[in-house]
Image 1 (tube, helix red, strand yellow):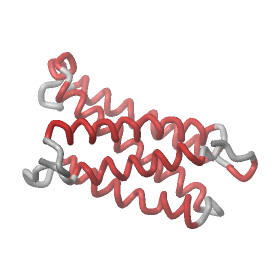
Image 2 (spheres, rainbow, N blue to C red; image 1 turned 120 degrees about the horizontal axis):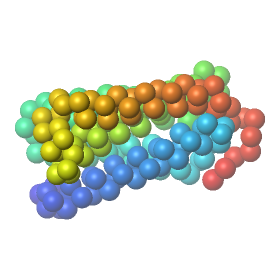
Image 3 (spheres, rainbow, N blue to C red; image 1 turned 90 degrees about the horizontal axis):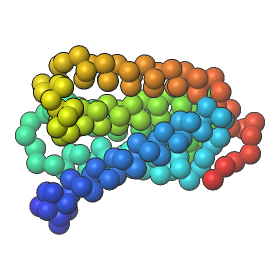
Image 4 (cartoon, rainbow, N blue to C red; image 1 turned 135 degrees about the vertical axis):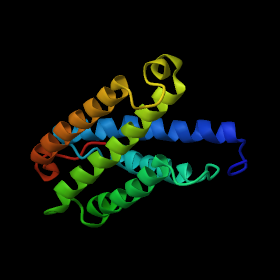
Length: 167
């Protein structure tokens, strides 16, 4: 039992939070490309992304895994994202710090999503049973390249003071 839930129910909650974080993160990143602040969706993204990492730490401990390492790094990356957005209001260098850290946090979520997909979805698992095969590597590299390109563009395009606030 975790937080009063069966391990299965807790896993479903963790996955739901993760998917909400990924979906809202994609919306936020696309909004940044249009220089939109998207206040409510950004809050949803940041909170669910943080909760994804924090709930990941509550699973039964079986030693330090790549998931735990990514969770720790994600929490560290989210600190400047929260500061940039809610303490420094995206002023000065905090604008690009927010874009970069938010993009990295979203990429971490996508990285774990791809790992879990290859482990849990039978058709994908058959393509890459150990996670070292070419289909897995191509998927991860594609996600990394897309996120790096979108993050780069978002740093250049996201100037929220130039446009009105969006919900």
